[in-house]
Length: 114
Image 1 (spheres, rainbow, N blue to C red):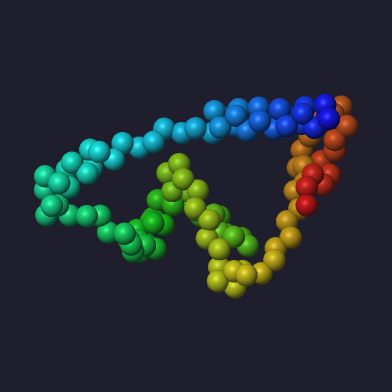
Image 2 (image 1 turned 90 degrees about the vertical axis):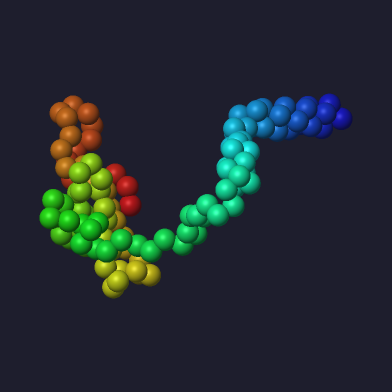
């Protein structure tokens, strides 16, 4: 009986604390509703935007590294280009250390993750 009561109390406390942690600020939509009420002819943003042309996204300033997945660096952003032939196929990747500090018990070339 006491175990059941203890488990019940723990569950109640857990759910109470997660509710406190998970609370988020709600957006204030009153401002946008007020603007729409004042100006009903205002343009609404299009729900569906078309993608930008490739030449505008990957311009002449992009630094490209070709490989299985092409990596483009435009400014501070990294963009990954996956070819159509790879979509829907499984790819096995293995992470290995290239260099390690001496005396760490880990060696270069050792598998980290699969």
